[in-house]
Image (cartoon, rainbow over all chains, first blue to last red; front, side, top):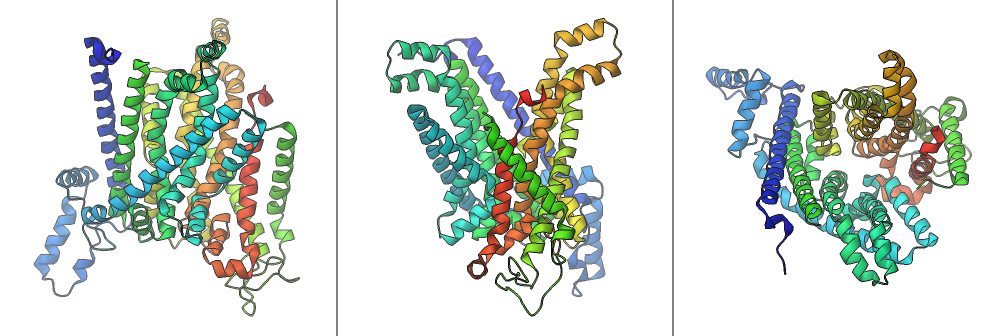
Length: 301
Length: 271
């Protein structure tokens, strides 16, 4: 077996490293700008600087002054943001205003629930979408086209909240609801991608030579579609996380989505901003990784 | 692949009928959307109340008509604003190129990287929940339009860049046309199909986003009805069993989104 073309020469390795660095810089930039956006929301949101603890009759005047001084230190946006970043680096994301619990603790408790639902949902949606898109290529009939268009059109026309309610009625697992929201978008993209791949001249030539359908699919179609499919993995991660909010809120699943909804209802800005940042970090990292893998795959093929 | 012409005509006809019904809600609806019949809460359909009443005794049919008006008028308005923002920024990025292009594309990529629903929640959380219903409806759709432009921008930017590199623009420049004339006579007519397509694509997206936000209690506020807060009736299965018309807003929403999917114009329609 010959080595991968990417690793076979120094120039390719350098290019791969440069690509990786670009993605890493982009990730850091997104987090910094996202953090600034979040800090701006919190700093200028109604109620900032009002501390209920000041009303506690047990506190002395000095303690009250100390609390006010604490807020005064972060009066400007940049000092607030700097303080926020410094604390975040040390794992301190502040305290939730509605639950009065550390935000890092809340995230630590709820992230595994959402991660499980999102990953299993993505896996189910991908399996079904890939299977049906491949089936469509082998069947190649108008009946399949009409049925798949109607099914995906119907699912796309349903708000994710309604899908969540259906899953509550049928007592089905949360990850299936996430899959149900993600599947139609994935299927349409993969289906169109496979149609385009099968229309490529080299695929037509392979068919004309009598090469078997499985070999054509694995050697020619997948090689053509791989970069876009890798990119789609990142997009589907973002879709699945977005779907998690309404689904977890309505199915009473104790995950990040439900926490975000709870924070928004209670106008707990520090919590909602930290959750947005966390999800952004996860989705951007996922997207960058998928993009990076896709570009490597494109160069390899 | 666009839908067959007959299907598109049927979709257009259905959308027109629903739009007209929504516009004429003041004349067609038998009652105001907020009027309560305290002696008939959760009533079954009857001659007095075609679709029955909700748990607060309000006429479901009237609320559906008024709710359709809110969703179907504000979603296109939000789509228009969003397309306008995308058009201006995408056009600037496409024609100016250089640092302008990089900065605008980077900001669009950045916004697209943030999960839309999380950002919507974050922005909505900064606004008070106890605002007047009409203001809550305006705020919901305004937030949607302010956050919904980046995906359209990419498409418009690509079209604008193609036009920038086209021969006819070079010819127009070399023949001494002024920049304003070039924009009015060459650029805008060529961007029109892309702008129109993005406008149509955004409408169902915003309708669904409003439905999701309102069902979560963060969109249009009661007593003003919208499809989103009417769908909250589905949260109570016993109400649905007592009055199957509770599902009417969902059917209407699915029908409208389906129609928008079929009606999406192809490039040839604008040629």
